[in-house]
Length: 174
Image (cartoon, rainbow, N blue to C red; front, side, top):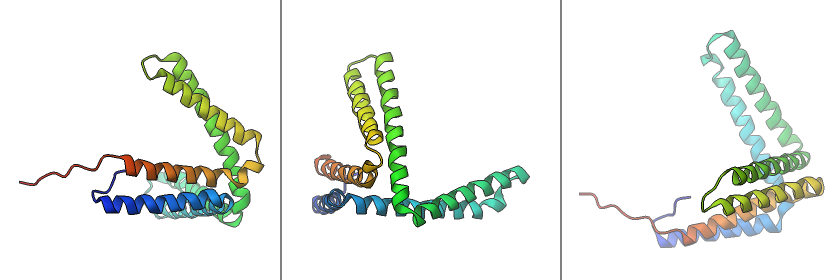
C-alpha cells in the first residue's frame, strides 16, 4: 500500500482502516458474510465479462471454453449470493487447506534453502501451517468467524503499516 503524501490524509486513512478493522473483528460473522457476498458479486461480474468476450474468442473451442468459464463464474457467484453463510463455511475450509499446504511449502523452502533469513521462512511456514490446521480442525465452527476476523486483522496491519511507512519523497519538476 502506498502512503498518501499528506500527513493528515495518512492519519484519516489509517483511522478509517482501524475503524473498519475493529468492526470486522467485533462482528466477524457479519464481515464474513459480507465478504462472501462481495466475492459473489465479483464472480458474477467476471462471468459477465467472460460472456462479453465470447465473441472475440478464436475458433469454436475457444468460444466453448470461454462460455464454460463464464458459466462457472456465474453459477459460483450466484451460489455465493444465494447461500452466503454456507459459502463462508466452505471458503473457510478451503482457506484452511490452502494455508496448511502453503505452510508445508514454506517449511520445505526453509529446509532446502539457506541464508540469513532462513529462520523467517521457517517461522512463516510453522505459523501458516498451524493456522491452516486450526481452521481445518475447528471447522465448521471456524467458518462463522475466521474470514471476518482475518480480514479485520489484515486491515489493522494495513493501518499500522500506513502510519509507520516513510512519507513519499516529492520530486521537483524542472
